[in-house]
Image 1 (spheres, rainbow, N blue to C red):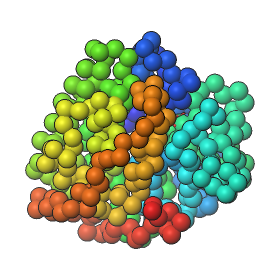
Image 2 (cartoon, protein in one colour; image 1 turned 90 degrees about the vertical axis):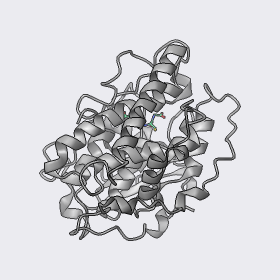
Image 3 (cartoon, rainbow, N blue to C red; image 1 turned 180 degrees about the vertical axis):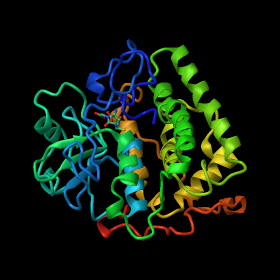
Length: 351
Ligand SMILES: N[C@@H](CCC(=O)N[C@@H](CS)C(=O)NCC(=O)O)C(=O)O
């Protein structure tokens, strides 16, 4: 897929600051560019890169605020990989040492025993010059970071971790639909997933306006596409829907105001608002979403664009559980041979 392999910054041209880490960003001087995933080893059934799929061997580290990490959380839930691949959740607020396990007792991840995610990066590569990003997968026995290549992670969970999938797990990346999923996902990545960041972190008026135009041009196209079909590709949920969902679910809470994508709120587009609520209400989607972590992270960490660090009280979230009527379009969340996932493990339930 377009994002993988060559790194997630491939679509952008200028060199520039990493997405976050205020200390490192240079607002006003360089164009926003997403950092590339530096560690791209893959965990596969045959273990070609030295990392074979194995239950209980790896730990997924996420921020619930992060849209790229949220993809992996959703895929993991839909595929029933919760017990095979445990998860560590970092504090939504980084400090100058980046992501921290301050939500855990003694500020340490209980499985990895580390206080900062950078410890796993350092263990993997001494003097690693890049940023520390989530999602990350760490090898528990050695404490080494295996990968921070988010684009490949969900594809591998879908296609390489099959021996550990739950009975009734959906095929999120069906072979016969891959070309279409890849094509749709490419535009979603460039103009939506990353477009909102290009808008929000723009350092010139033109850059903001170009990104804003890309965001809404693509959202209009997607809205049109989804006006007659329940899901993006085929008749059931696929990888493409997961990729679009993670940006849409954050749209009104952070991208509309904080990232200045304010032509309209998502809730003002009947098609996309119906689509995102449909997914939100599907087991495995809404139960991974933590609006508090999302808001805390964006508004408090990006002091370059929100110097007061004040987190808005809104928006009102009560609409998320209202009827969406999307079932009228035909299509079902899962194919006839698949089932929805059960409830999340008790220690992963979001309050
Ligand atoms: N560029 C990342 C993509 C994921 C990403 O951008 N994650 C953000 C959080 S949403 C992150 O961890 N940024 C580094 C930081 O905040 O220090 C990668 O290299 O895989």
